[in-house]
Structures are given as C-alpha cells and as structure tokens.
Length: 217
Length: 49
Image (cartoon, rainbow over all chains, first blue to last red; front, side, top):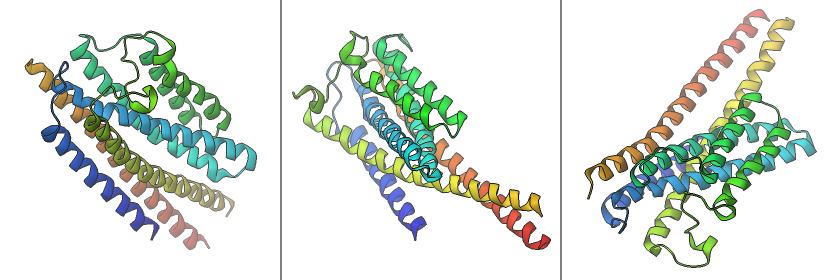
C-alpha cells in the first residue's frame, strides 16, 4: 500500500517534470538580456529550495531525535540530508554552467557561492558521520547564511528576484509561476526519494539486528 | 544569439536531469542490495534454528 502511494506520487512528479520541461523549452520566451541560458534557472532555483526543505526537515527531525530519543527521527534526518545533497549538487552545477556563459567563469568565490559550497560540504560531512544530530542542527546555520548572503553582502551572484522576497514583480509573472511549478514537482520527487531512503534505513537496521542474532547463535 | 548559449543551456538541463536520474538509479540499486541481504540473513537464521 505504502509502496503504491510512493509510486503514484513519483509518477505524478515525473509527469509534471516532463510537462514543465516541454513548457520551459517550447512555450516560454527567451529572457531579453540572457537569451536561452536563463532556462537553467527553472532547475537551479527550485533545486535550491528543494534542498533547503530537505535540510529543514533534517533540522526538525534532529531536534525531535534529541528530545524524544527515537531512532526513527535520526533516520529521517539522514534520509532528508542525503536527498538534499543531491538537489544542492544540481543547484551548484547548474549555477556553474550558467556562470560560465554570463560571467565568463565557472566559479566566483563570492559570498553566496562560497557559502553554498560550504553548506554542501558541511552536510556531506554530517551524512558521512552518521548519528550526529547535533552536527545536523549546527549545519543549518550554513543554510541560513547561504539564504541571506545575497542580502547581507554585495555579491557577484544576482540578488533576490522572487516576489515573495522583494515585494515587487521583478520578473515576468509567467516565468515566476513556472519556477514555483517546477519547485512543486521537484519537491514531490524529493518527498518520494526521502521515503524510499527512509525505508532503506529501516532495512539496514533490520539487517544489523539479524546479524547480531546470527552472531549470538 | 551566441550558439554557445543554447549549447550550455542544454548542458545545464542535462546535468539537472542526469544527476537526479543517477541518484534514482543509486537508490534503486541500494534498495535491491539491502533486500537481498535481508532475505539471505533471514534464510540463514531459519536454517540455523
């Protein structure tokens, strides 16, 4: 039953992503100054927000693990972090490709990019360390700094453009709508990935338990 | 328009889809490996008991 629900949501996410790809490539016009390359943003930004949601899930689960001492919360934090890392990698690499065309360089050590990389490395470290809820909680500081970096420092990275952050309509409403639609599709996909990964954590714990029993016999 | 612009756009989209596809394949492979391990451990324990 649970597997079927997961499959259904996964299929929905896949279909929505395919539909979005069609609209992004064939229906939406080029951006006036950047040309077609701006289409990368339909993955770059939603992937970043999806990764943030995953890290936020890991933060909440880690706090719950420390307060309730239930290993299931630790498993949720680990699963959400791993999926978050995949989406953050999409964000970083698509950003580099965009930067190569618009800035002429693959990477700039500006505040936003550097913090995004630090954030990825810190969560990668947490994911490798395992069972370290405290590290997961402290790691979230890097997520907050990455989010605010484009407001706190004058960076090479473009400033906020989405209306919920600026309070103004700086980009075409149709383009902004597609950013949210693709974020919804990626978030659905991430939800399915986290549940699959969580199931694997449970399988791993069952295996560890059986191994202990096998040694005791 | 610079032809590199379109070329890099396709690379960007390919990377986004490709990375997620690789991760899905990794998840599926891990799931089947864990399931196999669990089944073989269960069989082994049944035989021992």
